[in-house]
Length: 145
Image 1: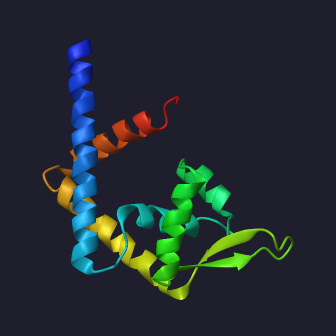
Image 2 (image 1 turned 45 degrees about the vertical axis):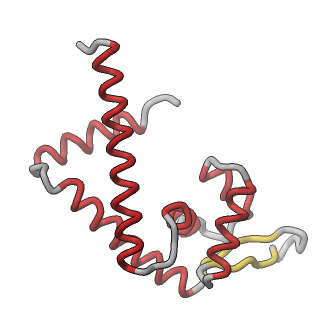
């Protein structure tokens, strides 16, 4: 049974782990010279899951951020040639965002970065411990909002 103090400790541990993951991924991104921030990396990964290029509003909703934040991320990614804005074929007032070839290449490299970061973080755990951690994280992630 947990107490309020132990719940607070667990919450703090989760936040510390999240910050550590973020720092490691940021370092890995920098070391590989991919020229993307963790937030841009998240947008690229999200963009890759759409069958057709989404609108910026769709990306903002999926990322759970304000549309202005997506505009800033897309501006940076477009300037580096990783995404492009394209007109919607059915409504030319609508702009959609699609990955470029360089964006697809960067996405492959980002998968390697995430894998390396995960290996670094999980290194102290045995296979059994990793499995239990995965189950616990699934339980927490799939819980009610």
